[in-house]
Every structure is written in C-alpha cells, then in structure tokens.
Length: 155
Ligand SMILES: [Zn+2]
View 1 (cartoon, rainbow, N blue to C red):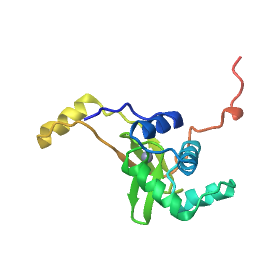
View 2: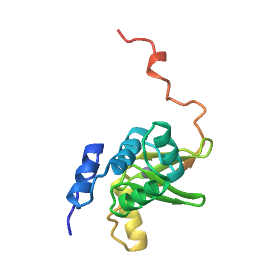
View 3: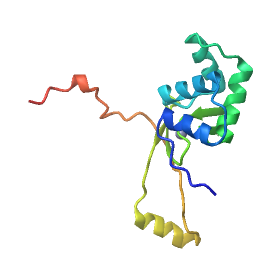
C-alpha cells in the first residue's frame, strides 16, 4: 500500500492525479481550481453554476463524472448529507465545524489531547489510528473574527 503525503495545494492535487494515472483534462483542472479557490464544501450543482458563471466551458454530465472520479480517487472530499453530496478540496482526515446559522461547514484540523485519546481507547478497547470530529454550533455572539482592518494599528 502506498502511503500518500496529504494534498495541501492545487499543485499537489494535480500531481496526485498524475501519479495515480488520472488524465488531468481541462474540465478536471477547472473543478480542482474552483474547489481550491473556494475552500468551501459545494454541491455538484453549485460547482456547475460557478464554473459557468466564470465562463468555463463544462457540461453538467462532465461535472458529475469528474467529481465522481476525483472523490473515488481520494483527490477531493465527498460528504454525504441528507440533502445530497458536497465536495471539498481537503481529502485527508480533518474535522468540521457545522454552523447551524449559516449552514456553512468549515474545515478544521483538530488534535485531541493524548489523555483523551487514551481514555477513549481504554473505554472501548480499540487502538485509535484516526479520527474526525463534527462540531455544531451558532455564530459566537462575541465573535473574535474582527477584520484586521478594524483593529487599531500597533506601533
Ligand atoms: Zn471537509
């Protein structure tokens, strides 16, 4: 089994396609570019709409087929949701912050404390090799995400 390095950029994603013998067609590249630009989880329909809004020449069927091929080869992420599939640029293990107000799903890398991992392992008798955490919540009332520009310059 080949141990792959995580895909961390559009270039990595294209290189991985090539390493796996996948042809990097113009359409396939459009989809990868969009997912890496957007950094969001998008449905096939949204991907199709955005590419066409950008004037990219890609058909509906091509979008679906390429998303299938890319997710089956673990180049991109495919999330199964009750209302359909969503695709994201991050294919390695990561966690999600699900915002209940905006329905946004943000990718985050979370490292759980060793003590917690060991406690879970002891409880269930399974050696943990990987994990993904789904967080759910509302927009924080005192959101620290103040835009940089609103902060007083530090001098
Ligand atoms: Zn994700």
